Length: 532
Ligand SMILES: Cc1cc2nc3c(=O)[nH]c(=O)nc-3n(C[C@H](O)[C@H](O)[C@H](O)COP(=O)(O)OP(=O)(O)OC[C@H]3O[C@@H](n4cnc5c(N)ncnc54)[C@H](O)[C@@H]3O)c2cc1C
Image (cartoon, rainbow, N blue to C red; front, side):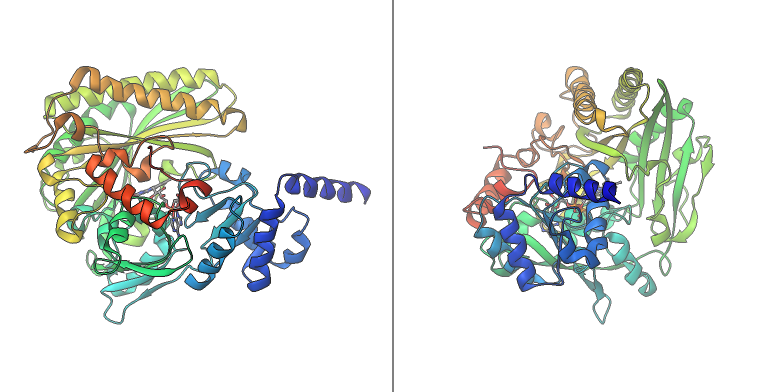
């Protein structure tokens, strides 16, 4: 009897040890005004006050893609239902400038501290701002800041429609949009952010505004790919589109033995340069599974076609490669976006990083991708030997970024923060992941992963720089070859905003300075920041 009591007291004291009086004051003010919307740390000294809602705190704490985010226990979690409640939270936080906070939508961003906060205030938009309501004509959908893509897809499916969203339903809508948002539908309708009609948001002083093409257009531009440094999004209106045949599409995942990697790499280079069917999309992944010092490579490719019949020629290169398993068939779009296969690393400790490369003419591109593959294999094998007792998964995904996507983006939404031009030609956005189990590797794993990913970037610079991308017409080849860095796949410390080019950087910075004069967004939460 005594032992459980003592251990509870010890947990309380640990949880409370560094919670400042100011953080407690913010939480107390919020709960006094909105008693149903705040839950204290479930192992903190005030836990008893909100014990009946402990499950809400715990699910906000544990539903992160990166398990290490759950080590950041907030002093309290606030679950706003609308913009007025967010505005009150912002005004309260403004009265206590030392208190840190975080904004959590889907909790998918793996960078520690981007949507989690230790001993501060977590503003978690799920579940109270988790709604998706199609307009009567179905052509737009109103989406609360707490939605994951699966929530949106689910309400649109009976209408035979969808929105331009994440390729995995578990990803949050808000964070996805703020980073641009790459979708299976991007070659038809551009990035996710090009399809936002308006954002409802709360500014740093608590004012509620609408950002759209006509209202606060500078803010609207910045929120479409420029990150979380300008305003808090509370809801969005998104365009919707008919998908496939009444919601049925063709797609799935094929897995391959490591011996097929070279053929897959050539097929990616050709698809990126030559595919002219905007309904077709792929995500090729190369994985290295490591345990007890053994590193096993493998590959998988996600296929998507916006229709139930794939025209001849579209995936022929891939169809001729022998696969080990194959789930491609006609299915509902929602079903496709739930397929993760070997990519399901939710619940592991996790880091992500991005490299942008030009899609060079086939001979050079295939040679580079093979050199890149070998270097990743060697690097992951060396790292597997360092951690014999841990399980490790390293992977990279070569995401085609052809000029067609950039053109569709321009045609649909006009300029956005990513500032790409179709005339710059075809690129690939390579997303790298590392997942591990033991907290003992929390420092070393991301650091050594960063070194490896930087080394494959350097490999290109040393051996292939200056070769223009396929379908290149204009632009500074040295810059456009490696930029922009895709925010949604980027690692903290990557200078994403600078990678949009100096003119856009200056424009975004000016917007940031106008909307965040006191550093409410820049200094009190995580996210990609202005470097100078
Ligand atoms: C397995 C996996 C699959 C992915 N698939 C895709 C994909 O298909 N396409 C793609 O483009 N990206 C993809 N991503 C990347 C993903 O889009 C980003 O990680 C994105 O940041 C996640 O958004 P979220 O809302 O889930 O994240 P969160 O972790 O909740 O938030 C991310 C960022 O948004 C900010 N934020 C959250 N809510 C608000 C708000 N209300 N107002 C202002 N700022 C806010 C936070 O401060 C944080 O910096 C994927 C990531 C993973 C791990």
